[in-house]
Length: 177
Image (cartoon, rainbow, N blue to C red; front, side):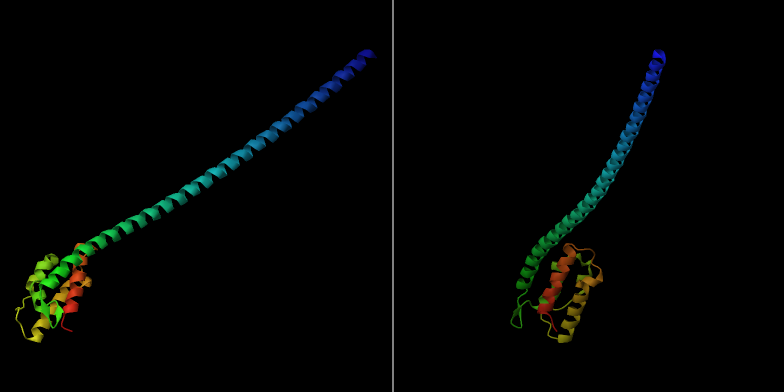
């Protein structure tokens, strides 16, 4: 009977150990599942980092475009300031006509001096400095305005375009309406 009790105790112990091993396998499965979830969370964090990086790249691109735009505007303003000073001097040097600075006849006859970038077109405008015929002055004035108008393809913003705009404005001020 004693041997049988011992064997029953051994079998009982073996069942307990099988239960322990089974429990250990269950815990390993739980730990494995936890590792899988950590991998999923890690992957999600990686995707969030990718999305964040893409957002940062887009933001950097917009900032760079804005910076380039501001730089172009600053360049245009600097060109405009230099050209305006030169054109103002050109108008003052032309003399006075009808009580205002800028004799339109002198301005038209010296247009090629202030705006040589017109591809020679400004050399086609001929007017006598003492011209008294209003129709002749008006015809030359209109030719000059067509030459300088920004819609006539002077190109991208730059010194030529800014110079044409300012010269056109000054001719309008001194012009024959």
